[in-house]
Length: 365
Image (cartoon, rainbow, N blue to C red; front, side, top):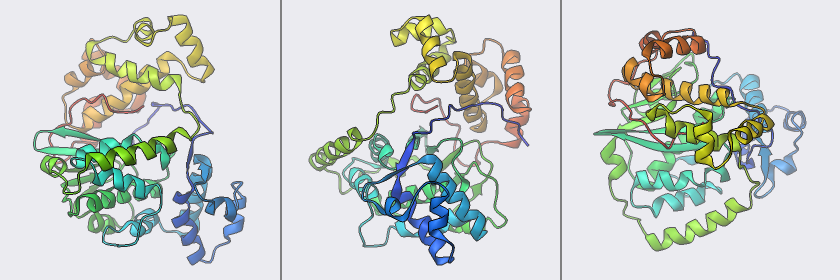
């Protein structure tokens, strides 16, 4: 079992999600004849708030309800099963904001363009939820990043809905070569293999759907720049109405990631690129409950896990995450995980089909 001391995430109690992510799980509680008012009251909610048009709930509330449902029903595959509402063959309109994400996708040039466009507005569904495509020759992956506390059932729901959304946009089956899920394996993995139509790897380094690059580049018959502009304008208005999430640490993490391949890990250099003094950088991070060293370790850890899991050599990974010596990276990685990079790679190797995944500036911390 890997011991994971990094990454640490700053607790952000004001992160929220669209209350529609509660609707399927509340319905599951109803079918199981469980006490819904009690379950909601325990997290400070009621059915009126849960059903309010365009309502938002805190991520903590959302997570607690999902965990309660899995615990009380005993169904560890609940998220996968509840994704049935997003079946791409259903003619009924999807609830907002999924309908909006669908229209953004359908009007895009291809699936890769659709995912990049949708990612800009993923906050309308869930703060901290991100999707992006990474291509490497003939194979590509769609990686999903979520907050560290995301329940396994909600990860399943997000991944299943994402695949169904892609199928609805493209009007194709979208064959996959492999699926990665970060949570542990269920007692019976067969429903996962049947749903995704391919091998599913559990306890993976990150959540991802792998498939042929040509599936992401094929032109969409519904592509319309004019319609996309109109839908985008509407989405931007909805996004602007949400509370600001301008965290300084996110900007620092993004700049650290940009600097690492060149070996730049100095806080002063990062501060200069962000237009602030080193003293201001440290002070603002302290106000957000973190430090520069914590963020540097977090970014290095996240990227190292991604690159090792994708099959890159230890020497390559050491350089990509800003270590001058592979031996120094070796010691740091073992302090984070309890395993050496080689041991981690042996236990969490790359998928059989896709080629190794290249560095990306689109990742999120």
